[in-house]
Image 1: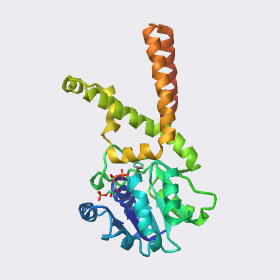
Image 2 (image 1 turned 135 degrees about the vertical axis):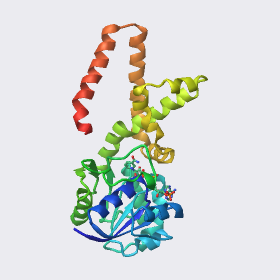
Image 3 (image 1 turned 60 degrees about the vertical axis):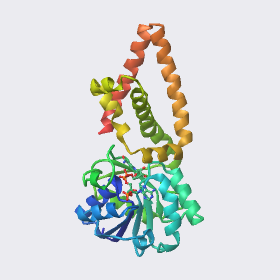
Length: 289
Ligand code: NAP
């Protein structure tokens, strides 16, 4: 499969890594990008991530076979509103956003109705690093990509997006956008909230210099994701707020239980809880690979 023209709107870690991998796989004749800043576009060209760039999003989407939204979630609606009258009828639209219902809502708001060639997608791959200089072509190898097509999404459009991910070594999964947002709130969004919260708590302590100086591996493992881009996570938390709020409530209940167990010096309850968690973690650790 060769796509004649693929257009990326936003070209950071996620869009840039896909472009690099697609170029290596020779899956596209031409990759054009538009980004918010000229500097990012110049870097993307210099790093051979793209073939060309344009000054405006409207110019970038002209005659594109596939258009990929790869900006933070909060930037998608204004971009969609800008480009919607300029997409060719044959253009397939997709995205890489970390929550799916908000992107589907944004597409509906911008287009009036959700086009049948819009294929919502979310690569379960990434890192705490961001920007075009963090992009690398192996990012998606053996990683899962979740597609959340709608009932009326064209099969041909889904197939093309699937092929564009398969060609870079990714594995595809399909589910509803509702289910996606619930699952990712638990496995990705809540952990980021907890990591940001823990680091913020410790950073506010008077002796924070010493605390961070003596941080052990566990602290580093748990808080690595608090180095992620704040804007991206701000957007995700506000976009998937209901699912995240429910999980924060559940987590508060869990913490209260642990607190009571420790207060009561209930040795067997504490061991049981840690053992239960370790068993679950060990069982599912194969899935992390
Ligand atoms: P990134 O590296 O920070 O790149 C973001 C891109 O969007 C850059 O081209 C940036 O432009 C542009 N942009 C930022 N704010 C903008 C705005 N207000 N208006 C227009 N353009 C804007 O981000 P990323 O990690 O690639 O994430 C992109 C998307 O992928 C997000 O929706 C995120 O939820 C999703 N995602 C991320 C991960 C992850 O681990 N990072 C994983 C899966 C999915 P400039 O550089 O020119 O400023």
